[in-house]
Image (cartoon, rainbow, N blue to C red):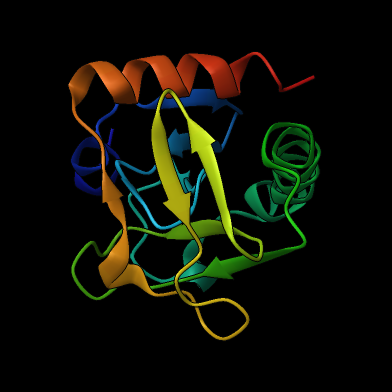
Length: 142
């Protein structure tokens, strides 16, 4: 796996695997259910991904949106491609909602609602929390 995938906690953060993509739990939860959609490729330019990855991305996005709709009842969803620190192709998937959601006794506000997501206010999860939340999210994927 490429360095970006490892940085986001793979394999403990794995939620769903596709042929060309991994869906990972984002350890710093901007909002509850924040994910990373990471290309398995070593590409550092989006345009360098194989055609098959682009086709499969539609299936991955559809699965993500259905799972997060069931899990967190988001009102909007943001896909951010921020490849400055972690250069391999990946997107941050941030479900958006007014107010806050709770999981396992922890509150996850959407501090940036209704504007851009406030990445600095993310709730940082520990190892066991990451594994439990990833497992719960995995169960919502069809």
